[in-house]
Length: 134
Image (spheres, rainbow, N blue to C red):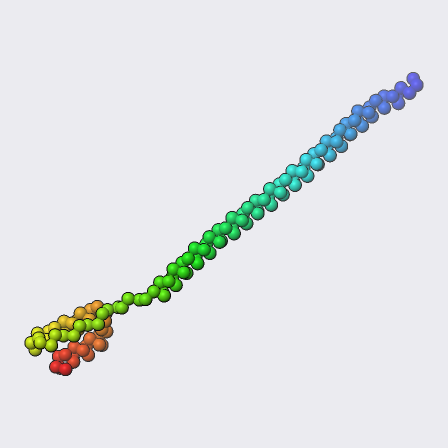
């Protein structure tokens, strides 16, 4: 048999070579697909990061605007004139009888003390002065 075993060997090698070529082709396709997939994932991740940064920036700007509005409102309140705490006490009527005058003055002092216009010390001193006749 001329070339018999060699032909058999050649016949065996061809399918191996064809399978090896198909494997190389498949590996190249899979590798390319993996690289494309990886590239797309990176691209989408970068887009997500950019969108998150934009949202964070907008949220910070809104918070700063709200805080500035609060500061402006507080400054406006401080700049507004403050109302007087209590109007001054009216003088006692001059034509009142002596007993009624003393009671009226003590009542007025008690009202001023109760409303916080007079401290305890001021109230005591004014009461002593009224009771002393001065």
